[in-house]
Length: 91
Image (cartoon, rainbow, N blue to C red):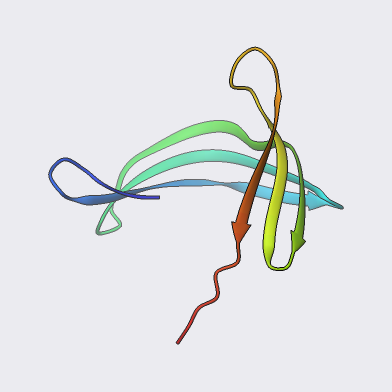
């Protein structure tokens, strides 16, 4: 994600981790969160232990990745859907 700060400088946020799939199951474990300046210099590197897309199941249909997973916005789990379109580079 790229963001512009109050002084009009760009910086970006990245997460580092590993993912695995088994059948239609998707497991994503995030191990670090980085903030980088517009030049790519690391500003902060924060170790974390975070599971992304808890109980995730995925499918790809017509170049759209759909992930069904669980979120916890309050006291109870909520089924959640995220969709990602495939990016196709154009020369």
